[in-house]
Amino acid sequence: MTTFALIGAGPGLGLATARRFATAGHTVALIARDPRHLDSLTAELARDGIKARGFAADVLDTESLDAALNAAGTSLGPIEILQYSPVPRADFMKPVLDTGADDLDAPLAFSVRGPVTAVNAVLPGMRELGRGTLLFVNGLSAVRPNPKVAGTSIAFAAESAYARMLHDALAPKNIHAAQLIVPGAIRPDAEHSSPEALAQRLYDIHRERDGFRHYSEPLAD
Image (cartoon, rainbow, N blue to C red; front, side, top):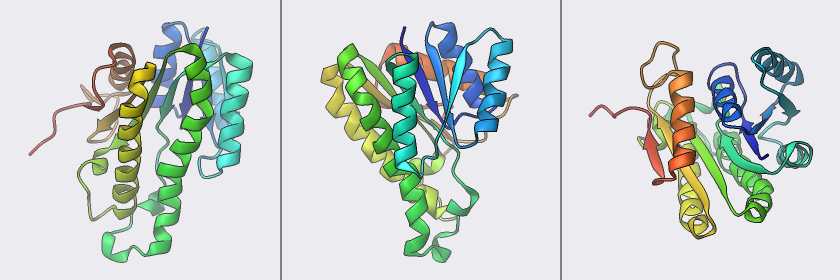
């Protein structure tokens, strides 16, 4: 049995993707900063008959993130699917003219150092398995820079470039890297961007392994 590891576990998309991949037979590793938050999520999944374990780590602390992923792979089984979808902090979203060089340190650590650390932690296990999936979930500013949220626009663009390079470099090794762009808010009543719809879309991307960039819904002009 292989493991689905979710970085940025939360009560919406996180629980939905955990349920979807668990239904497909994967063990579930939830990674977030707050151990109490993780306990709540794993308890909720347990009520649905899903066995999941939480591993506390902060994506801005690369040592804790690397340790959490290694612990998950050791205790639950090799990580076959990694989803990187933590929610950016509000202070990443300053207007471009109010953004100084120091304001970009945390967003770039969040969207570049975090993903690079996570991928390097799981790649050896995926190579040993002979397969793997790397899923990156981003907002619209990853592909349409928004001057109102300069930090995420810059950092998401860098994350997109990294993920695209992984897609090209790892395809011959049967490891699929893909990005899902969610243009708007994730809402329970949204046809294409509800947690359940996005979880199914991410599972389909994992299974179909078709192309790099996907959108949860068509973009408005």
